[in-house]
Length: 148
Image: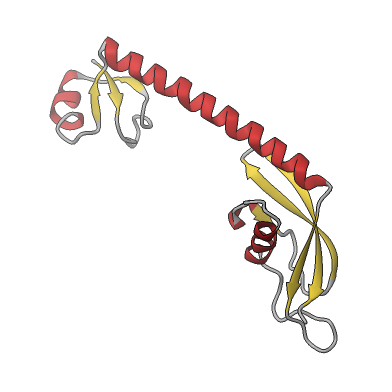
């Protein structure tokens, strides 16, 4: 019997997969537990439409991420942070501070999408990595200055 999984099932497949299982397994376990539904032609068609919509959405997100990387490539963000007497930072520069500095410039970028390769613990100019999408990566120049 062909079924469409509505949730991930260990050793069978992921949500949205069309798999072939025995009739008893489908009737006695998958259907009662809400893990699958019968693979009717209308259900298969709706899965196809949903996959196409997901592909279009991912393509749009990818294009927006590439455009964001191009915008940020030549940009330098100034981050003001507390420092000690000799110019060392209290702690290290974090992604939240960079995200907030970008927000002040009118650019929304989640702090989870910013990667600081090694801890920044002193004032100066640095290059950090941004990953707005899975396969898209860009660089951002950061100028760390003392907070007055």
